[in-house]
Image (tube, rainbow over all chains, first blue to last red; front, side, top):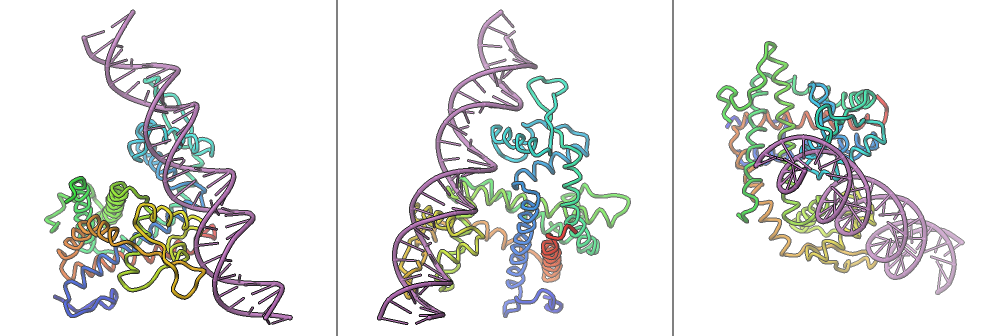
Length: 171
Length: 171
DNA sequence: ACTAGTTATTAGTTGGTCTAGGATATTTTT
DNA sequence: AAAAATATCCTAGACCAACTAATAACTAGT
């Protein structure tokens, strides 16, 4: 339907119409992912850290911003790595001056991992430009368009999540 | 989906309106990425291979489907890894029976990497379900909605790509 | 007080990448 | 035609981040 108005998204005209739109949607999704991966890689290189380290740092900064304190265990769970890997990750981040280990106020087994102000600054500078760009694109959408995009992404996310559940059965 | 209000997408109502939509868009994009990453990881684990190996295999299968032949050099370039890493990657894939090395028809220095029929089958089974699911979601969009989504993703992709260009200059 | 469970760490292994260098085949120069 | 330069792939050795298994320090239940 509405076969007009696709000058911008081209490449996918075809006799069928409907099916071509779907292919275009999936392709644009793949392209987006590729671009995002490239940016992450570039960021990662420019900060001299691995992907996981950056994820961890961002998690720590977010937690700090909302007043939560983070133990190594929380990082393990969030990142999906073992506690041993988390220990060495914190070692790395501490060695590079991005975090400090502090004593846990009540549980003396545990530790609180705190990002340093410098790392906060660094991440802001490095990731700020990307975030602003993306925010600008999002703000370019009308409320109705935003609704369509959010609905689509959520539905796609749910589809993937359900898929992941039934992954054991060879289906 | 189908937007009956936003019970699903909630959390983002606020006095401002416009800005909250943008935040919701970015959040849904993040969530989608997280879900996709999880599925990839799960697939990777279930096939007992690394991420790079799966990318390589898919590249090989696509190339085969379109009649192109692939040399190790092509894999290096596509994956962005060194030739040494590519060698060991091919070693792995050959050891697990996913590919074979064959002589290059004209250039006797070179080698052609060919995916085995079994690996084709395996990838089809493993990735087919995901692709069908995603296609189903995409087909659930009207033409107009598809246009909005594709435009959005393309614009976002361009924003990221331009960002990546100016990444050397401290900006 | 003793046992069981939790939390973080250490030690050692594995997997995938890198750099450096070597082997073989092709192309270009002399 | 022979020699030099280039191209393509492989091998060797090292590094890094993840893993598993075992340990130390602590908390909580009985």
